[in-house]
Image (cartoon, rainbow, N blue to C red; front, side, top):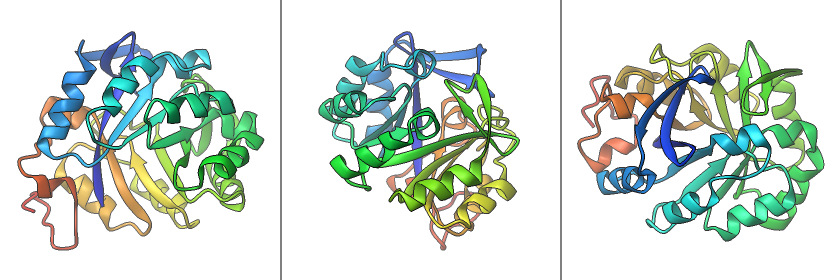
Length: 247
């Protein structure tokens, strides 16, 4: 299981939100490029980038910064505000390796299919941000009546192979992931990238034991230092790992 550092962009800064609340923001750096370079130099094998301004406005805002991050030589997956095929194309043109579609998966399901047909299932990822088992939309500010499991099943039928699953109530809290819900959605069949609540090595170890979880996104725990990456091998959790993180 791969560990993927998160870079959440708001107004040009690298920030973290508490439970997706834009009014509860912690700013970590005014230089996202330096943050991306830090994770690259530490051995990160992929970066998870979220355009928070784009998620709120419905159109990409931070693409110039994303383009710079893509020059670092580490694959970048991008979510936030990508709600048309032109948005998807612009992200790919900026150098993004994987595009994450969230709100669009519900409001414009044909976009998911069109994107898969044009760029391939390996480059298009479903982003499911859930609260209480239901999908949140538009920067997490609206909770839909669509169960997370239902949208994942529909996406699988449309050729999607990979899902970023975020439990909003755990995101940015350092309280541990929602293992039960993560296991429930992963049982449907897609490769799951788990997000939300990772606080310690033990959390990563338990996620690695859930079937179909191929990666975990870690944000605040890396920035606050509750999880420290001291070797390139530690970006991947394997069966030989121990709970103390001695990889």
